[in-house]
Amino acid sequence: MPLDDVTTHDIRQKAMKAELLDAETEMRLARAWRDDRDEAALHRLINAYMRLAVSMAGKFRRYGAPMPDLIQEAGVGLMKAAEKFDPEKGFRFSTYAQWWIKAAIQDYVMRNWSMVRTGSTSSQKSLFFNLKRVQASLEREAAQRGETLEGHKLSEMVAEEIGVPLRDVEMMQGRLAGSDFSLNARQSTEDEGREWQDTLEDSSPQAEELVSRERDLSTLRGWLNDAMEELSDREKYIVSQRLLIEDPRTLGSIGEELGLSKERIRQVESAALGKLKKLLEKNTGESAELMAAEV
Image 1: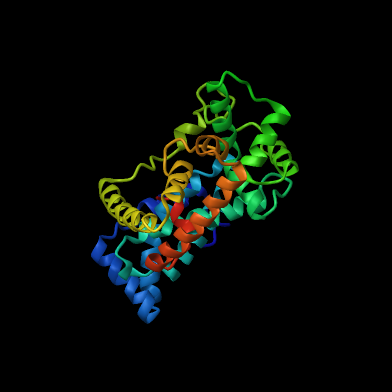
Image 2: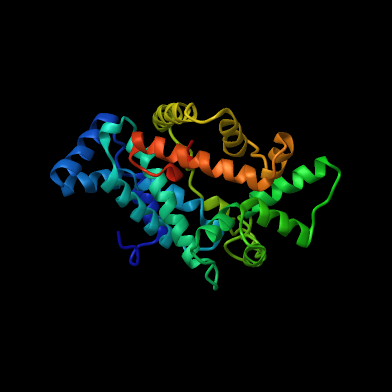
């Protein structure tokens, strides 16, 4: 979908006017593309879910990338989802497509962040999207102990927690140090100029989307629960504390509780996630890393 000759507003308007597909129609279109390579069916399926791609692209504006580029990358992810979607798996295309759209946008943001590339290794990507969350978690735990973490000490703990070199942490902190653009800023210098936040569309999901999403996530959680039963009690506990609670715990806090080193907790977690990935792929045919963002 070339975007050079259209505005972001035009793209949004066109996406919002696209038809809403019911489950039966969506299934029929997906099968027509998968089995007969029916391009008309593909076109209809993609157009129906461009509103999802536009909405998800908007969530990454804070990284400074042009909105048309984010939308185009979201469209690429949507196309990949359509290519790989299996309608017989039992969940809606919208749920499946979110994994691919998010992955495509994240890869684009990583490639084009600021004037200096952030790199594309797994450790750099993990830092880019998790640095602030891990820092906040470590600072909260320190505050509960009556301590204050600052500067070099905090960077060292982040490096150990995520499992990356200290120099990578310090480099990423520098690149992410720029201030965010305020949505309260006015579009013009005139008193009556509206704020940028006034131009944002309501991306809240509709009732049908909520019902479908909850059903699909229920299926995914069922697969995850079945896979978790194949882990040992210690593996289940570590994975649940690291990934499945609202405020994930650090390796250090779990290690103190279990009487193990951070490195040993990391090893157990890595082995457990490897098992889960293999078990989940039996059901989904896709990487468990894509599912993690939704479950």
